[in-house]
Image 1 (cartoon, rainbow, N blue to C red):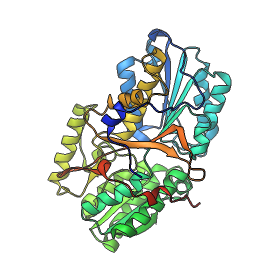
Image 2: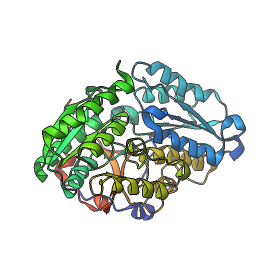
Image 3: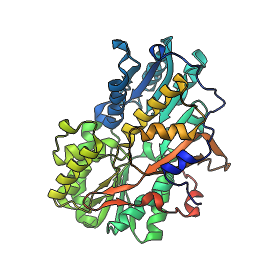
Length: 405
């Protein structure tokens, strides 16, 4: 399947329909528009939260007479789904609430959106990186966006090979592997490794939402990575599906060898500041400056060519971009069914970046979802520059791999 062209092509292309039978929210004056933004905490998904803070910086918090109402769901969201659902639904009690953005869309988001629609059918419901199966979230969200788990299952392995990796270690746990998006990507990665000549290894780590918590899960990674590098060798690329695992993984790869293509939800902020001891307080919000400072430190620690990322944070962009899209729809300057308008809002926070993507196609029916978009950006390798991942044609066979629970 030949994939879509870069972001610029999207902006010139004919509009796609994203709405799931929903209409654009009624126009409203800026002063009467409230947008709810729901993210994880700093410990679970810092970039997502920073994207919400960027919206507050631009448009003000509701408590101060502004537009954005930001809340966070519990770190232990798996055992507190009803709390998460209640938090999201409570946003609909605000008569000025016009849209709700949940990033990431943790389990319970689809049910929360359903209840929101029952109370207020006029509220737009957007989610970034939904954890629930595509058909589940598509049933209640007006728009869902995912990092392209189909294409990236191939392109991450392709990039690892370009970086010189001979082995690829995929680190995850049963909850994540039960998700159609993450489970399918893992299967594609294994197939791509076989096709491109890398050895695929699956390693299990504790779920940060389990009894061990974030600290216990991170300690496990700190202890195991040196053993894995000794076992598999330094020409091994590592990948983990959980944000909380990323920092300790990067720290130990830097100390003991190994390679890292990009995070599950890539960003120069994802794991790198903590792992390499980088103070980015002066560069906050300036991603070109952030990228340069991180790159300088990584290169100084002999990491050139061995560590990668996206030049801009996906988590940050999803929160901020979806919030911007909701705002423009509510103000009547964008349309829900317009891909041009959606990508313009994402581009607001990623100037100069190249994107690729397509609508999600249901694995069983072959039907293209009108309200679910898969997107990805070129991989940036510190000390080497961009790899043209968005220019690669992903072989048709990978789109036909079906999720096996």
